[in-house]
Image (cartoon, rainbow, N blue to C red):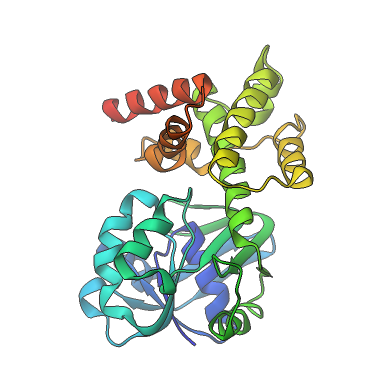
Length: 304
């Protein structure tokens, strides 16, 4: 299977490297700075098991040739508009596009641009970041990759995707209910991002502060009410596990949005929090805590 990995940051770099190591034909679509970095030093993974380096196949938007069987989009959500243009030459009649982005708004965007039949569901669970020198740092052994048809019908095209991905040295989950998985991922990451960015700290610091647990539970409840109104068929055991994970004071957690914010980078405020508020308004839901988070993030972006 010919695979194009749009992006070679922490997510794209890690999972793309694992696919390449498993013998898949993987090309990384990257910008000039990342292209030069990877040409000079290779794609370096720092994992709990040690350091690995590989020489990746690279392409830039103006050098893409031929169609790809699978395009995995791993850029930040605010870079999606440019990526739509960049990957267009690589999209053929049989191409499938699997976005691994935060939130859900990107799915409709990709479907409108390329057609509903080309977009499949995807998400990952990994604690990883990109170092200043370009190395991908996997902070814990967690490395899960979920994928499946958005309508739950995993036909022969999805079976081929599964055959290519399932032996790539990561924990793969071929899901027949990927939409619920996507809703639950959004519930987790938006709660985590909201409380960390608002309180400017990790979950351990928040939960051991006066009112911290109430803040986390309040944000969680508001988000759950929004996604349920939007069509999430609540799975009580799954949502309970998410809340339990977030509420463990022994395990300090932060979100990628919080880490980007503390480093002065652009953040996915509109895609992670702003979109939830738009959906809440559609159903006349009161979300005062999310509104406070959104104002906080907007001020940060104004001050950048």
